[in-house]
Length: 268
Ligand code: DGL
Image (cartoon, rainbow, N blue to C red; front, side, top):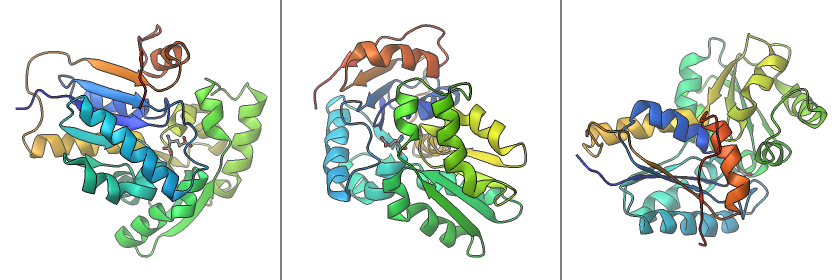
């Protein structure tokens, strides 16, 4: 048994989709969450920029004594997971492989969509992983820069015309039965899950990459004996590189707390 916390990071509030699932699976674990809102969005950045950012995010979590790291960011997972795994010195996992595994298992027709940030689409990581696990699958991908800023602003409802317009345009390639399974390849997107499901209709199964990553990290901790088996409810320390006051209400909303949650402003 290992009482050290688990580190989870993303560019902003998106990785809280992984935190939510992880807390359900292993409620005794302490979590240190880093939302790098000073540098959000990651999705328009070059690989070199993303590598520098990922290393500084990992360094911060290690400074808090974490025993394992979940990269709850599709963009970092797609572009520099090898670097993170090679440099962290503790077990690290991302969201691409677990999300693809779930999509391949749940697709009946083998027509799988991937909705992601531009940097993730450019990397081709999801497509490579799908080809490795299901060589006959047909993949339709779409990258967009529009959704992350909306989610960071707490705008997730179809009643909001900017949300509706952005979603109608980036979901167009997946509509009309083009896919039966859609990977939400950016961890911000499950926060738009209700709106996406409404626009695509019930025939398309949505894969939440953050939740898939959380399930994989929980398995990894259990299998390696690194999990915490104490009878307790673990803590969740929320850290943000941006203003804490902006992060706190969104964190409360997205973690289902029904109130703003305290966050700590940190400098990397
Ligand atoms: N949640 C991040 C991802 O999964 C968002 C990237 C961004 O900041 O653009 O890709």
